[in-house]
Length: 212
Image 1 (cartoon, rainbow, N blue to C red):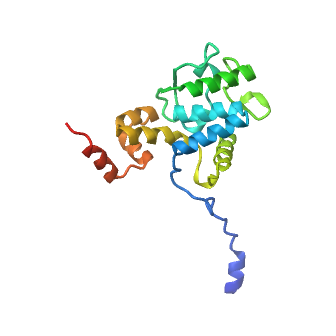
Image 2 (cartoon, one colour):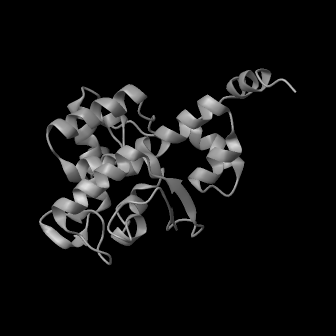
Image 3 (tube, rainbow, N blue to C red):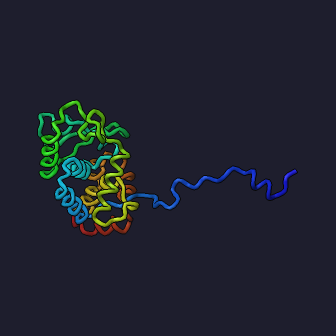
């Protein structure tokens, strides 16, 4: 027979929760001032790949796994970045169309000119290997590095922060949930409401501004 103390000793050690000390839940979007600060930092450091990656992530509103899966022909089939393109996300399989702003196209063109990457290759190469694309983990580390460089706590932000940034801004400026739903590739508008973190009071306030 074992006494109480011996029974406790026989119990397997309890693992620490995976999220111990971490903030969980939806990561907030970046503010416009954050976006411009990060762009300026990357431009000053002449980090062409990171600048192209950051700009494309903001414009595309894609999940991290889809951002790193983008190939050269998806955005620059003729060697130069297009105004608009269509990507088929892994999660839904439904094509999502998005715009590429002037600064994004310029950043992608500069990056392609520097690296000479061609159709058939991943747009963003992984560390020290041009054949393999950037991994989602490498991308997440870069996002943490970018936000930390402008004084933000990287624990509060992630790759979804970039996905949400432009979507939230579009919603705040227009109140058009359907448009944001299409841009994010959600099948249900309820998913978009949850993703944006929209409160009922916010929706009512926007509705009150619409006079018909």
